[in-house]
Length: 537
Image (cartoon, rainbow, N blue to C red; front, top):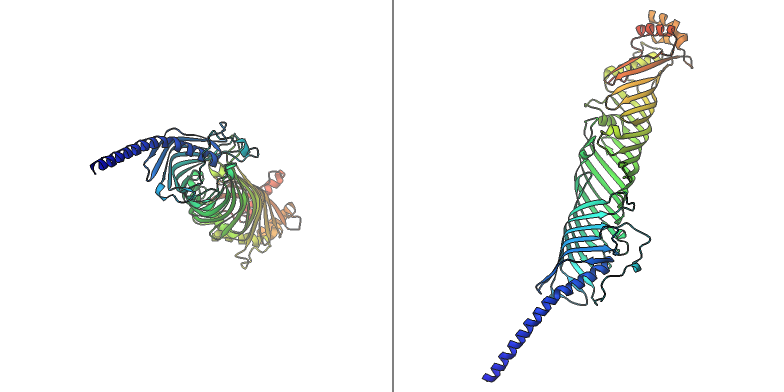
């Protein structure tokens, strides 16, 4: 018995020693084997050459692989940034729970990752890439339960080298259920640079396109919060947005809504609640956004727009180009955006068609805005009683009934063609009409200075002498021939100068003879109310 015990003890000791030696050999061999497995897996999945700095293996249940300084070059190219660089990658798997022909990795955690997605190219051919691994391992399919990454920089490289890549800092991204040729669920938190704000997004990513990474499918929904519009000089307000997107990395179809409770223009100072619904296409290779439709609404006004937001190559600034249509809009709402104070001078229904361009820059929005269009204001009424009385008086005199008190509460019509540029609004045609009178003007208005410089004609249905009564009417008869209109009434050249808060109105007879200039003096003395404009407040 004792001899048998000694033999058994010796056998167990030898077995234990052999197991220990084997374990040491296996543990020493595992890092090299893990390196080969990791390199081959990454090469095949991303069609890239793979470089790994240090690699360590810890434990067996679970087994943990830690790799540092991982570099993947798409198709081995060195003329573009690496497809991925990872400071540290830690993967864990429980060998006791492996079932079937598939290897299952329970978790992968990455730190310090940078991803540079090359643009789509018709010249890339998968057959052109030959992995650097000489002896290929016969590996089973590998599935990943969860992959997480902290503080990742995602860059989408442009097609044109002179453009800057689109960059996004992703605070945290998590992918689940990652298998071969299957999309994975993802959740990401990232910062949008301009306007600065936080984005939460979740959806489906993949399967990864190894031949054309920029054509990898992605779809999901997003929430964009606390975007500060104050980064755009001339604007203010905090924007939030929700929506969904679908497409590939280099081109996404996006639909969403925004809410800015305190949207404001610096030239006005009156905040409004602005809501928008938009449908757009985003080109990930250059950041250009093509707006199929944008519907913006505030107060009782709706604005319909379409166009593009483009960042051209070279030194040219980023610009917004829109085609704008207003068919359901109110003059008082639009004036609230551009007028200081709470009293809006004019009410009425507005129609407008215009082309708008806005370039990025540090100057005020009024200096960067360019606009060309036509507008029409119907059923216009002035909120100031004194101004409305002047409009009523203009209509009475225009009809030749200066004492007809029943002509009151007159509704006006305003229409025009304008061009906005370099802080000035230029009107090639501005027409103001009331029953009996029409004012047609050309000129400019300073968006910041509020200075007026308009010249044109005042057309009256009545003769000049019919705009007054008593001796004034008799005195004006001598001037009827000088100011006779084409339809038998009166036509007077006029000018409006000064500033919006204190305009100056008068006859504009600079091109008339000196005798006509003397008549101007007599006319202004005889008819002080005729040229008092309805635009004074």
